[in-house]
Amino acid sequence: MEEIALSESVTLSRIIYGLWRLTEDTDRSASHIIAKIDACLEQGITSFDQADIYGGYTSEALFGSALKQAPELRAQMEIITKCNIVAPAGIYA
Image (cartoon, rainbow, N blue to C red; front, side, top):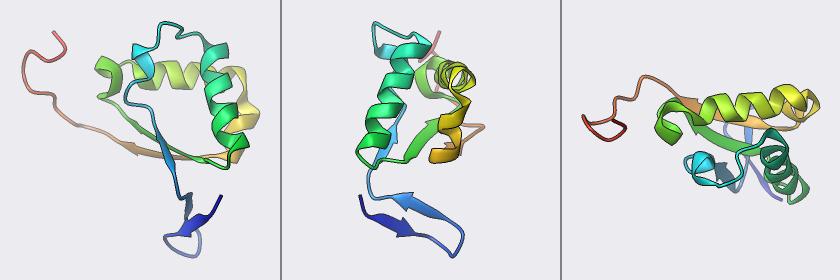
């Protein structure tokens, strides 16, 4: 897959896999998430979008647990993240 260079040291895959709905999957096991990551990498999708607010503030932990079980995957990807996003009152209550 084509990569896009943002600078000399930063490149991203043209398609970025968003982890917003990671927690909506009925199978949230690390092995299932690793399979998703592997499928992306096999297709050349190396960039993953994450934020602290995703999945009711739980997506990062699931993604991190999967990478902890398969740490070799981390070197093959770019993680785009944001933090300190404040959800409007009541969304995740």
